[in-house]
Amino acid sequence: MDNEILRRNRKRKEQQLKRRRRLKLCIFASGFILAAVLLGRGLLRPVWTRFFGSGTDDSTTLQTDVARTDPDAAVRRPLKGKDDIEKLSVNTIGWHEDSKGRWFQNADGTYFADGFQSIDGIQYYFDDDGHIVVSDWVVRGGVEYYFDANGSYIPGQERPMIALTFDDGPSEYTDRLLDALEANGAHATFFMLGWIAEEQAGCIRRMLEIGCEIGNHSWNHVNLPQQTIETAIQQIRDTDAELEAICGQESTVVRPPYGSYSDEVIAAIDKPFILWCVDSLDWSLKDAKLDYDSIMNSGAIQDGSIILMHDIYEPSVACAEMLIPALISQGYRLVTISEMARAKNVDLISSAYTDFWDTSLEAGLVPGYRGEDAITPQTLDVRTDGTTDDSQTEGTDDSQTEETEDEIAA
Image (cartoon, rainbow, N blue to C red; front, side, top):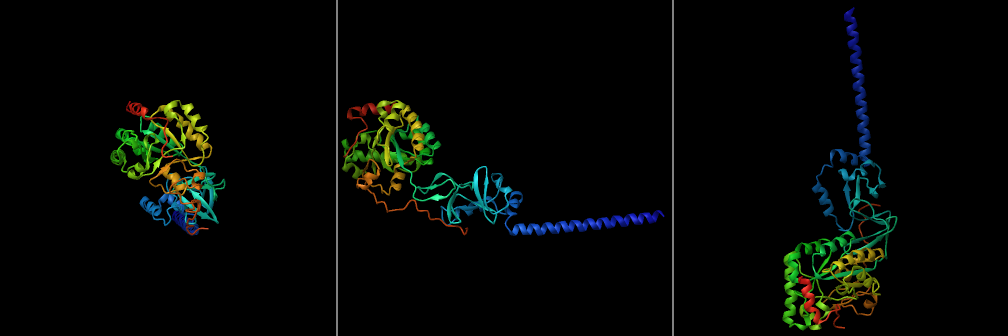
């Protein structure tokens, strides 16, 4: 009797085990079929990448970015790591929105990033995180592009530009000025004295790092036309040698001290001489508010203006901290001299420049101007990636030369 009961119990357990094995097999088979379907539709890859990796290392991803045919076209980035955590919850192809903005998921589980992309006939710009830029400008290769509130590229839009320039430095205040420029995405051109450069080497390297331009203001602020040609050349050459030793490149542009030059001096030095059309008079006023008012009320603030300031005075830097965001809020883009020239279709040559105003360009007063149709900077052509007088003065004369140099040395 007891043996019979034991046999029955064993039989029931065996049957239960068989049913469990069959159930597990069915579940496994169903899961496998579902996974295959999802993978075939490109919906499983983001989840797989999140938990098991992409099967490639970071260097492969980097190579994908570098290898793109068009350097301005967007790349396809795989979902990977904590930076993509919001995107990992999405399993459908097309447009999506998270806390940072709108982004697009492709059928292979990747998303567009770092460049232009055409989708359904509309051009978008995807930032490095893969989100489209809206109601803002994008600067790529020195050219500006505007995208509306929907992220669509709007051709023909141009933002007026102003070139901020600073003389006689660098100084103990220049890093503070660079902070203001960097914080506002602005660039400037610095015309520096050779004898000061070495003690501010780090500052000069930082200028280039944030997109500013380095210019030459002679070795020790001499009036170039009053020197022999050999001395004038040496003043510029020695400063260039110092700059190159510091940051690996010499100056691209020259500002003659006191704005004083001659055709002979320009020809001998063989570089663009950059003057100005807006004089802040900060060397005289030395008051941030007065400096600011002098510039803003000059009547010469317009597209293509060159503003003269000095970064050796603390009030001038304080003025710049107010001026930079104020000009940007008025719609201006703050650029270097070379950036201004490129945008205005001007080849900088060995000549003198005071402004890049449209009226000056049209009148043939800007040397090297190639005309309106020389280039078309607002043309957006990207790949679809398979998816849908001879002198000016700074308000100083020869009698002030010694005073200026003494102030700089102090």
